[in-house]
Length: 385
View 1 (cartoon, rainbow, N blue to C red):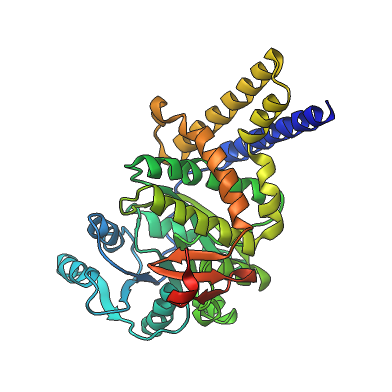
View 2: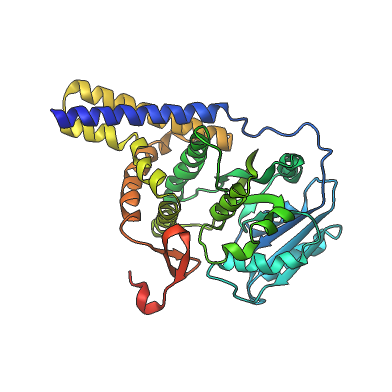
């Protein structure tokens, strides 16, 4: 009976954390635009690229078609001149002759993180003070830059970042991942922010002054870390500057992925968060509003407990649907709601596996993530399963 009471308490706690998450997400001014677009400092956009898919053209084009009245330089970086994305960029640039844009081959390997290695080699070509870093698969609205740089009016702001949504969850596995990204992740970030200022950055798009970047050691300080966005945000916060969230949501257009690819992606994410924020990650399982109610019912399978559990699951599904609708500006299909409790149960397994190893697959290579998030590339003989 004591076990049932403990599990009942954990179920109630998970429900309370879920409602708290909903409350802070509801209050955040998501999708709000600036009303005064007069702040248009010169900006250099750094876009490290690798590979090309059906969405690459539209993602890259969105950066060349910005409605921004200040000078904008766009630098596309690739590790090899033979990368298929080079042809994509070369065919796109003539369509925007007014843009100051270049493709640069960054052939040196300056650390375990290939993306940061490319950024390090792009930075010397940057001409402007404001640096915007964006992942390859990110598509932005035409007014994105004017909104992203606006918080940098304030000298106390050291870095601006923004929420992102998985824009094309076309397979069942990707729709499962979309629950994690479009419903849970951004609302969990706001939940954490309600306790203390954010000290990590979200890496889909980050904007900061070159002076702040150089003050924390530049991209070289991130060269051997998997979560370079987390590390950059941490360094900027430690320097005494604030991290500010831009309300504009950007889109991530992923290549088609099946269950194995999505699972590896989620496991890499889980192990990265575990090594970067071990205590918050350990306690995060308390917010699993599917697992704890179900466990309570298994320990005390009565009609009253079953009704309470169904109520908990109803709240969980309703709040997750609300979060997705706010971020994506479209309600999820009723036929996909079963993915919410499935995501929670699979998340329990991911949470447990994150503590049982440090190997991750990233960009076709196998690494070991050490304490603090440092990457060590493994030889094929060491990689194992």
